[in-house]
Every structure is written in structure tokens, then in C-alpha cells.
Length: 242
Ligand SMILES: C[S@@+](CC[C@H](N)C(=O)[O-])C[C@H]1O[C@@H](n2cnc3c(N)ncnc32)[C@H](O)[C@@H]1O
Ligand SMILES: Nc1nc2[nH]cc(C(=O)O)c2c(=O)[nH]1
Ligand code: SF4
Ligand SMILES: [Mg+2]
Image 1 (cartoon, rainbow, N blue to C red):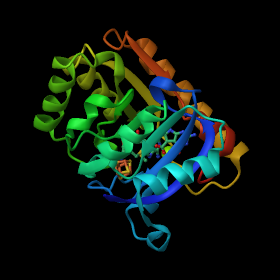
Image 2 (image 1 turned 135 degrees about the horizontal axis):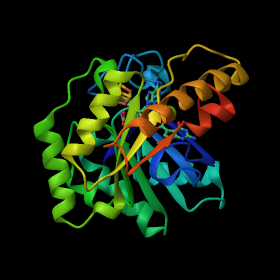
Image 3 (image 1 turned 90 degrees about the vertical axis):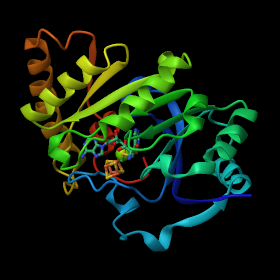
Image 4 (image 1 turned 45 degrees about the vertical axis):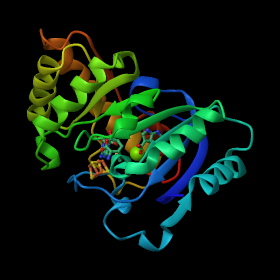
């Protein structure tokens, strides 16, 4: 029985981002990432600052914890991180969730392929734009999108690009041209991770949202796209576990 490095199990809350935004869901957050994005809002999953909070849990223990925390008030579970795609045996957990009639969403950046991607109900791949200081592995991203397309998983898949500036928007435009069949979400980048007042942050992020909307409206190639803020950041600010 595999054990997985888990940092947080919380909810129910709303999915604040992307393809199933607003959906009532539980979150499981895994520890560890192969990237170090300059603006990562979950850096505690990989920078060592929360290492004493990491628990090595079996599928059974995770299922128990989910029920303990979420009671019977959920039917959807989102796995995020860190990068949960680092965990080869995560199919054990995904299968157990499905066996309990729970829908499963997963967030990853497209740097690794796992065969169990084919079983995720709502799979979000979030390739990283220049502002992150990460390099996209285009060969890997092509392979992931091709495999999911071949297996008829397009209705379960979305791409989500976080945008901080014009260069990031150009990157998102390129992503859309390279993978035109995949639903694309543009997400407002949160560049103020130290703000503790949710109202201040919401005010700031809404002005960035307006900028992003304006840019996308001016584009003649970003037509079949959706533009969203992180709804949880608007409501709860930079708080963890919401
Ligand atoms: C913390 S990541 C974990 C999953 C995976 N490592 C990834 O990046 O897709 C979850 C989502 O949050 C987004 N994100 C991280 N930091 C952000 C920020 N400062 N502003 C907006 N979105 C951010 C990521 O791009 C990703 O879509
Ligand atoms: N409410 C809420 N929605 C989210 N969507 C993606 C999240 C993440 O950190 O992956 C997240 C999160 O942390 N909270
Ligand atoms: S890939 Fe995701 S978890 Fe990893 S550093 Fe970037 S935003 Fe953070
Ligand atoms: Mg988050």
C-alpha cells in the first residue's frame, strides 16, 4: 500500500479557479514540486517552510480524513499541490475516490505524464508563462495533450495560463494556437502574496482582472477563451486552507 506526502486536506469549499469554478469540492494538497515558480502561491509545498506538517498517508487514511473533515457534505475532490503528477501510484487514491462515487479533479503544470491522467474527471494543466521563470517542456506538453486527445479526454481537460503581464499574455496566445482544441482559461496572477487584508487584495486583484479582460477583448486570436480571477482570493485573500 503506497503512502503519499500530504500537506492539507480541507473543505468543503468552492473550486476558486478554472474549468469547474464555483463547484463545491474538498481539497487534498500533496507536498513536493519539480518547479519553483517565482510567484507560487503554495510555495510552502516545496520550500521547506511547512516540512514538519507533511504526513505520509495511505489511501485508506486519506479517505478517512476526507470524511472526518468534510462529513457527508461533498461529492467532488480536487487534488492539487505541489505537483501531484510526481506521484506514480496516485491511481490507488483516484480509484478509491471513484469507488465512493466522488468526482475527481486534479491540478498539475504539464511537466510530467501519468497514465492515471486518463481517469481524472476535471484535469487542469497549467503551463507556466515567462514571469514564473520556469521553462516549458514542450515535448512533454505535446505528449500529454496528444495522449489525452487520442483517448477522447478533451471534455475532461483544460489548460489554464496565469497572466501577470503582456509577455505572459503572448505566451497564452501561443498556447492557444498550439492546442486549439483544448479549452483555455486565463487566470489573473496574484502578485501580492503578503497582503493580509482580503479587502485590499480583492481591490487590487479586481483591477488586474479588468486589465486582463481589456487585453483579451482587444485580441483577434484569443476568442474562444475564458477569463477568470481566483475567486477564493477575492473572498478570503491569501489565507491558507480555503
Ligand atoms: C499551486 S498550483 C499547484 C498545481 C500545479 N503545481 C500547478 O502549478 O498547476 C495550483 C494553481 O495555482 C496557480 N497559481 C500559483 N500561484 C499563483 C499566483 N500567484 N497567482 C495566480 N495563480 C497562481 C497555478 O498556476 C496553478 O494553476
Ligand atoms: N478554493 C480554492 N480553489 C482552488 N483552486 C485551485 C487551488 C489550488 O491551490 O490548487 C485552490 C485553492 O487552494 N482553494
Ligand atoms: S508548478 Fe505549481 S506548485 Fe509548483 S511552483 Fe509552480 S505554481 Fe507552485
Ligand atoms: Mg491555490
